[in-house]
Length: 99
Image (cartoon, rainbow, N blue to C red; front, top):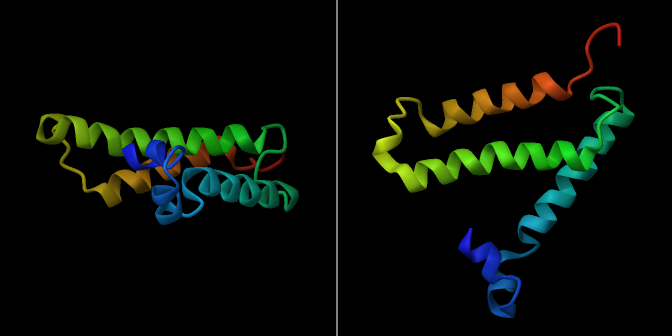
């Protein structure tokens, strides 16, 4: 997180980070837009909001594990948590049959 913030003001860090979070966000927005056009995702939602929600879910999970460490009491692996967060996200953005 710190590197992402420092990349805004430090050209050296920005070069190492590449497109960084902004590029990741733009790429996800583009992908979600494509999936909307294909009819896979809800058309009534802005792809930027969907991307923001996805990043909020995933980054918060990482941050809470970093901040809380063992105090979080997670028995699930990061992969298991990621999979469940993905399922939560998809349940809100996937087109329902008959919609």
